[in-house]
Image (spheres, chains in turn yellow, brown):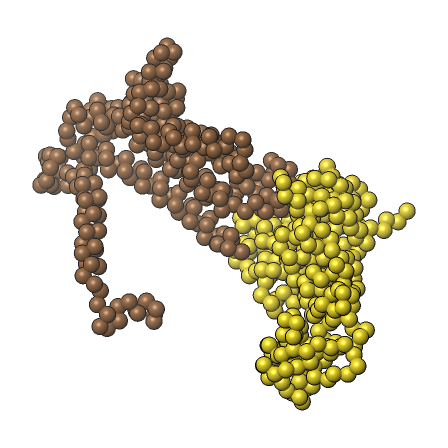
Length: 328
Length: 283
């Protein structure tokens, strides 16, 4: 039988003394997928990743990697490799020896392990820096070496703990594309922990939003963005207005809202509180008469045709089908 | 340049306190190094000269005197004893404090009691510690000697120092290095051998040299636990109370040179490794 999932979590719980870090979560990650664990800090995403890696024991439940229960296995025998947030490059070893480290531990002869390490440095475009020590590299270069060092293990699942958070924004976008390219080329699953929804949406095939030790919603980024299941998701994923409506709450995408035109559709009244120019769009935030904050993303051409100022009264309206009821 | 000149730009005079404190510091330096400098200079006293100024010529005859048979025959012997003892003290201190430093990273039941018990020996009066150990040996009918009672007495002094130093070193050790090593398939021995110890090496060298120099010039604890064969400091003390000649100064100059040489070589090694690795931890 062909296996369908690279990783399965079955009712996994992690306790640190009295505190519950991960509360009975279940998750299936299909083969060769890019999975992002997204959530605010302290939501349990990193604990989950570290349990999969084997750096943290599992309090309850099972973790299967490639259909094998990994509970008792040491990190290196799980078929996983991990890239640490700080990269954790060994400061006393050259890039080449860092990458060759796992082969050395397995007793591969020097010439052979250096040859293979060079191939992997090539893969991440760092072949010219083989003799350098980690301290002599920039953050982005260090990350490439850490990538090569993990990938030389030829893992079936690659674990990344906030891999882009230490990079400057420009480099972050560039590395993001590179990670996606590597995942596609290698055909293995990546599990990527992040607190940036932008990063998660750009990368994920499977987006898993966590809060308070629970998985609140999982699906493709598009499913999550178009149908956020709760107020928390709608707010955390961004780009939505969350408004009280009739007997519950609704989420409306801010880019589907319009300003000023009161038609037959649903609308709220308020005053303009903030105007932010964002290039392609202008974000106009209102404080509604009910005291709630709501925003419209207005295409710049449209905004400058009928400009409003801070403090002006305004109406926010939206097509009925753009609203989406939220669970309590 | 603009930054460094702001403090002394025209019309911006230093306050008088700068000069007052500067003078005080100068006086302190003279007080600290003056007497030693006098000893170093007088150790090159001419063959006809005495233990005070003026210098009657200059010679190295007092240095030669140390190694002549008969006169000061015990100095080279006690020197080699001191070196041997300091080497053993240094090795034992490194082994125990590195292991303890790594163990204390995770609190264990009773860890604070163990810690305070270890550190308390720093504040114990040194003479009493030596006295107690000497007495204990006598009580048990054991002969005090270099590598039993004296070694133990010196360890009560070097171990807490080593432990403190290792705490500081281990504090800056990033746990994820070890996790990365396990991730890459290292066994716990391989992890220690190829990752933990090499990364801690500069700190370990520091502990080794500190323990060595502490042992090399230890007096109070050693004097009551050494038995009949003196270490260098005890031998020098015996000489000071029995005889006075510039030979004593020559011994002082020589032993100081040994200490400084040792420290200089270690610092050089440590700085070189540190420099090569740069400020990795900032990463």
